Image 1 (cartoon, rainbow, N blue to C red):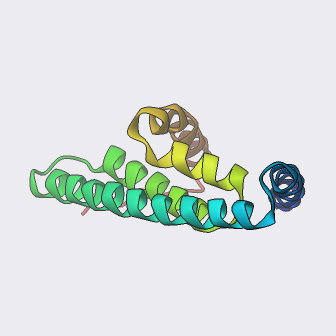
Image 2: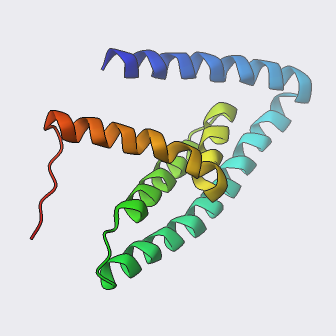
Amino acid sequence: MRKMIGAFIATILVEIAIFIVVGKVLGVFNTLMLIIVTSIIGVIIAKKQGMQSIRNLQNSLSEGNPPGTAIIDTFLIFVGGILLVAPGFLTDFLGITLIIPLTRKLYKPAIYYWLRSKLKKGQVFIIHK
């Protein structure tokens, strides 16, 4: 929990620093417009990718395949969409990397590792019906 709070505070401080630098270079109005435009574009991309991910999840379930990869894709796209809506350039960059399929692949090994460690510790259960 302390790591999450520390990361949250560090992110806010980095975002403020980036706002100051970009604001000095582009001006306040242009910086605000850039933040708004990146958020709108990000939401559009997240919606498109999210709908595709949900269709992939539904297809996996209807075919009787385990939906593990589709669930992780949907989760990463959801988190990316939230980061894109949050104002800031760092969060926009992270959000875009979570939404674009090519860069999303870079996050999957960390998610799998985290899930495996939780399963070994007995903190996550998989229920079969």
